[in-house]
Image (cartoon, rainbow, N blue to C red; front, side, top):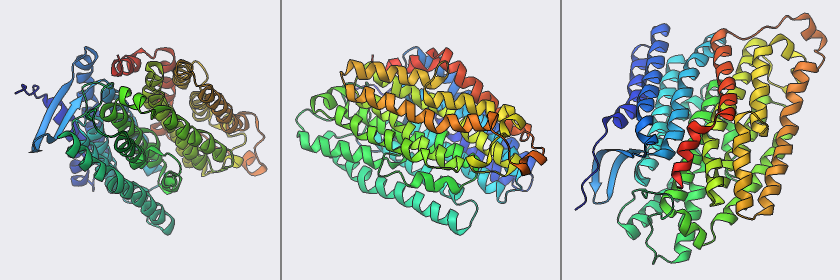
Length: 493
């Protein structure tokens, strides 16, 4: 009998930190300053615990903690490995900044139900970190569902007809696909293998070699489509509908927790349940790459047609998420590295864009791009950060997104797929087409007569400082990508 791995309590404490934080937020709801202090302390505690694990994981160790055993080969357990740290470090650090930003946004607009908002925000991070550290498919599924349920009140925060409709679509899409596709797939995988534990490496997977190829293919398709938080078309429409939520929620949805849970779960299952070698043998990789390429291009075309800034950013997210799956699907080490590092690159850049959108709304109450002409001169920090993050989405050096597209391009060349090279180049041009006009109009456009008489200024410092920090980090990751790249390279040695 194999000796069980030693238990690392840091994993349990990291998962519990946002859960305890949510409880303290609820308990202190009548005292706003104390409530936000508890949110910040919970976020800082989570980030500190994750940071303390980094040296061990960088040294090649995999950390484990088993909560409880249900059946032989079936447990609720946690692990920290190279892939999980990319997601966990990004999410935990960005939660710290989002706490500050949310305080400025919610107080600036005098939003209602701020205690519920902060508590659900913490619970969403509880689910996201649980997904990051899931040791098997069962644990991943449980925390995936927690994220869906806990973010519904955030999407429906305004409690009007539009927000309730967006919330219903959000919850229906995400829970129906998970229960209809992931849950039965888990049962069949357990029957075939006797366990749901992720493989020790991304090459072999866990399915026995004698399982019929069509069974493996059907399971694979169900898992890719079942994690609908990944935003793959045609199961993407929940994501733009969720834009009715307050901007900090949109930032959470599109950068930190929800969509990253979707793509992280998809790629985790692709690599650690099916494995690179099995996917290659069954020719599952390249068809998946072309399938998500449709999302990359079409979502960018739709983004071009949107005048509402958050709607344009929403379709940008739909497009950008598929880069992560594309990298894994190409099955080449350089492409997988590019896809995995985009989890962090996209997180820092996209949260900057949504932070900027919220700051613009708080300062000017403007939502549409056509109304923002000349605002860059009144809000230079906000629109400067927006410009930097836009360059990252486009893939221009020296910002983080350039690293992603460079490695994806190398991976496509390694796979000898000219079609994917064309997709990457075309998507870059489309990215530039829907981001460049926003920046140009803000800095060089002529303000309207009404705006010329109104002296706009930057949003509160609690909003401007976080968006400036995330913009600076986006450049830093572009110039010095080794921190996250070391984890990405360890996934497929």
